[in-house]
Image (spheres, rainbow, N blue to C red):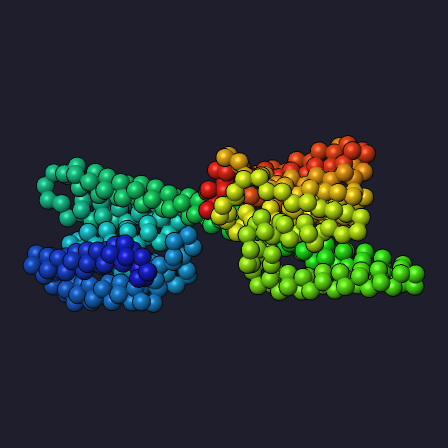
Length: 401
């Protein structure tokens, strides 16, 4: 037996080795005291010594295979050699009978059942023959029945344990494989979720800023010759958006938190957003109903991003002249409403997933509201404006805090 890293295996190996040498010494002492016979004594002593040496060499030179692996040719050769020496020793010194037990264990422990069971049968038969050969007087049935019974029980137990171990190894392999597949799935899901989050952040910050700059620069180009003062105003506003975008980008790289929330509260950030979005042709009013108190950073960021996305849609698609941004703090929820008097649209045609050709828009706002534990609703009728509402339950807010 080879020593393994399993403490139980080491203890079992030590017990088997101790049992072997105890039985070997006992058999040798019995031979010297009762069975010693003339010219055969030298051969018997030599066989006892060869038996012990082969057993020790097998431990170092031909260790048994690890669990679940077939025995090596070297181990099988050692097992056949030590069994042959034991059989020869048994023919000359019947006192060596019970040394078969460690050999029986070695065979059952290391070999597959199709080899171990015949080996156990052969060893048991040799023990019975030896017991019967040296018996005095009438045959004692125990000399035949006892070795067979002990060997049968030992064989059945070891074969059962071996098969159980095989099934357990299969189950463990399945479990390890399942955990590996689950970990890979979770990693893929995490990567997709992170990509979604990053794309939403980029859409709600840099992409919207670039869109606003493009519109302002196009407007400046249209009136460059006819109204230079208006063109310069558009350019100044575009430069201001560029400055804020740069600050937002740096904040985005640092920790993905909105720059507007770095040094002011959510109501102040929403008020500043409404003021920035107001301009020629569009007036945005901010209203605060109730006191939101201290909110988690993640929830404040989600509400601000939803407001930015909704106002970006108003500016780009609604053709509205007025919009109202309202933050309402109730006992059971916090809600954010963005209403405009624009052209409106058919809500049955709303996309449910981000559109790569147009951006994220309403689907991204829905994702943000859902990730915060709330929901986003859109009410609109062609020609009658649009209302976008995000509601976050108060219980969710307290749990996030």
